[in-house]
Amino acid sequence: MKDFEINPSILSADFGHLADEIAKVEEHTTYLHIDVMDGHYVPNITFGVPVVKAIRPESNLIFDVHLMIENPMKFIDSFAEAGADMITFHVETVEDPYPVIEKIHSLGKRAGMSIHPDTPIEKILPYVEACDLILVMSVRPGFGGQHFMEESLDRIAAVRKVVDEKNLDTIISVDGGICTDTIARVVRAGANLLVAGSAVFSNDDHAKAIEELRACVLS
Ligand code: DX5
Ligand code: ZN
Image (cartoon, rainbow, N blue to C red; front, side, top):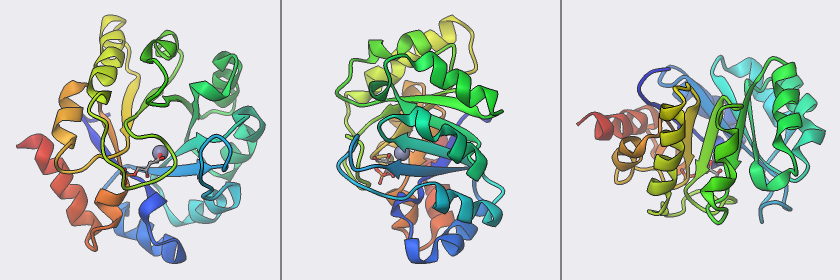
């Protein structure tokens, strides 16, 4: 992948016009972040398999499905079949991550693991090598538009250290509070896939918002 990429999160898109919203970012990014919430693991409900399936024919972007759900294993097949390219589950939701990672890989998809800001970062470090992506949450998952937790910078750096020491190409993604004020620090700390919901979709010109985020890192 490139040095860093912006990954628009449809959580802040207009759900009544989802296909149109995606079309507006289609030519300006490579990934699309899709937040699935179950009302149990997180205190909010979004959408599930049918929505992923419905938007799949509308886009050629890499669908990065972020499962904020209990018992992710139960739903891997359905999300893979619906068109997910990458499936990320939370370390807090499984006893043993390896069978889940293997299941995702067996379906030909990329496997990601995410970590809640309240969970010690050490919990995820043993799995960095087995995963294609590590998603460091920089807000408490559940809602868009929250403030970036500054303590996430050290956590990102801890994951980056493992990736570099072992010479891996695991993607380091960060999710929550990414905006023009925070993105440069996050990339400097070692992240290379930046999820941005409100920063992209709350701006009427989504494409311009993506360019503005990029410019903050490059300047
Ligand atoms: C939060 C979600 C995020 C959310 C980020 O639980 O996982 O993907 O869309 O939203 P912003 O970028 O608005 O913080
Ligand atoms: Zn997310």
